[in-house]
Length: 245
Image (tube, rainbow, N blue to C red; front, side):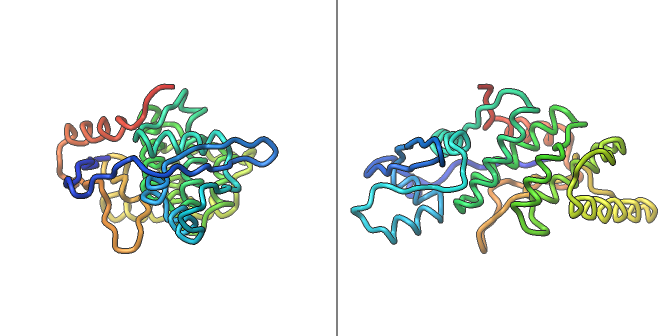
């Protein structure tokens, strides 16, 4: 993988964290209130931008449904700091999936892509790591066919090259098994024709990013003949957004 995100912007694009505060109510039975700058919410999330514009300037409270308190807490952490705290790979991979799905509901593509990058960092740390059946079920239930995160999950299984990861005892959704079978057959066909087969080393995390219409990826793609040193540097750059909890 080789992508480096350019986080610099011209001075006139600077976002000032100031102004009105919005109270965000999260949770069903147990509720928690998060206080977030209105301007930051509207800058990051198309969902919040539409909701707050519709409500008018006097409105200062919103309720977010179908998002766990811990997930929204991580979302607020990221939009303020650009950092994603984690504990262990096994525990935190599912956390990043929850963040990805929540950011999708909030129409925050930057946070969705950051969650994808975190998942790829975890895969780099443990190359045999793949999402478990319960996580795959959650993603396939919440996303549409052809979504980027579905493709990522399929590719992670292909990259592992371990047939034991597909176990008949697992409860993987049928759609995932179909996607995986098609991808495996395409890869087999490419190998038989001496074509270059996509791998973790030659892929770009931008392959799995979501973008608004007409938007370009912030991450720079590496050409396939670039050095392994460049790939290593970019993996380190992507990992910079993660911090042990």
